[in-house]
Structure formats: structure tokens, C-alpha cells
Image (cartoon, rainbow, N blue to C red; front, side, top):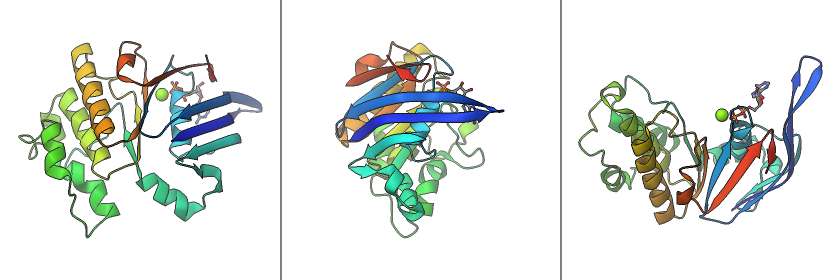
Length: 217
Ligand SMILES: Nc1ncnc2c1ncn2[C@@H]1O[C@H](COP(=O)(O)OP(=O)(O)O)[C@@H](O)[C@H]1O
Ligand SMILES: [Mg+2]
């Protein structure tokens, strides 16, 4: 469950204050999916980073599964960040690691003594079973993003934030990736927030919000 109330965020731009997000309110029930649209510079990434606990709002509240982020101390915030999954436009895979190592790397850091129980099932669902020994450079963009999705899901996150995950993919691959991502999140009852430029992908989502100059339409 994601609840945002009266949220503001600004940056100092020289001696001028630049309002980036203004008076945002949002409610997304548990397990539901939001597509966040908006032109470049409208504040989408900033908003996502606030929800992910990577940036702090100037004012207002962000509550995730009934936990108010601004009330968490550093240890609690670190725990919160472990329970979220992040997916990026440029995949952010480690070039020198294989597909399998990329998927499991963060999981090993977080839980050194625990096997990733979902691994085989997940790679099969993502069609990566024959690519586990490959390096990222040997994969297509769509395959690399499927590795990015596997890496986000392997930690059993309660919530996933995806920032333009189809920004580097053609139309057909964008639909494939978003269909897979939303299906996998539905099966696992994960809240999903996905930023996109494209209003062609909104059919896969329960909610759609458009940011314009830091305000919801
Ligand atoms: N670190 C920063 N310092 C100053 N301004 C920033 C910073 N990050 C983003 N901005 C500004 O905030 C606005 C929103 O940026 P961003 O959230 O990246 O938008 P989007 O993801 O929708 O393209 C833009 O005007 C951008 O220039
Ligand atoms: Mg952005």
C-alpha cells in the first residue's frame, strides 16, 4: 500500500528555489500497479526516489504499507530499501558477471547464508534458463531487462519501482517486458510503480497518473 499526502520537494538552484514536486497526493492499495507518465523533466524520477527512500521530501508524508518513511531511522530505512526492488532504463547489470551472477549478486549480499528459493522458477518464467552463463553484452536489450527484472524479484520485494524500464526497447519488446513484469508482480502480490513516457503501455496497469511540471493532472 502506497499513500502520499501533500508532498513537496524542491532543490536550490543557485540562490533560487526550484519547486520540483508540488502538493502530490496518491493512494495505491496493496498489490496494485501504477503507471506514472509525464514528459522529461516533469519530476517522475524524483518522485520514484522519494518513494524508494533514496530522497527525502521537504514536506508531506509518504507511507508504505502503513510505515511513514520520514519516521524511520537509518537502520530501518536500510531494511526498507532491502525490501524494495529497483529496475532501471539502462539495466545497470555488472558487465563482468554472468546472468546468473547478476541475478544473485544483491541477494548474496543481503542474505549470505540463504539460498534464493525462487531462482529456478523465476528464470524459467522470464525465459532466461538458457542464458545463465552468458555475459550481459551477449544479450539483447529485452533479455538484459529480463535479467534486471529477475534481479529485482529474487529478493521477494513487497514493492517494485521501475524507472522507464522500456526506454531502450522497441515497441514489441516493450509490451513483452511490461506484460511479464505486471504478471509476475500480480502473482506475487507486489505493488508496482512504473515510470514511462509511453501511454501505449497503460492498459497493463490498475492506475495511471500523469505528472506535469511536478503536479498530478
Ligand atoms: N540533483 C538535482 N539538482 C537540481 N535539479 C534537479 C536534480 N535532479 C533533478 N532536477 C530537476 O528536477 C526536475 C525533475 O527531474 P526528474 O525527476 O529527473 O524528471 P523526469 O524523471 O520526469 O525526467 C528537472 O527540472 C530536473 O532538472
Ligand atoms: Mg527520469
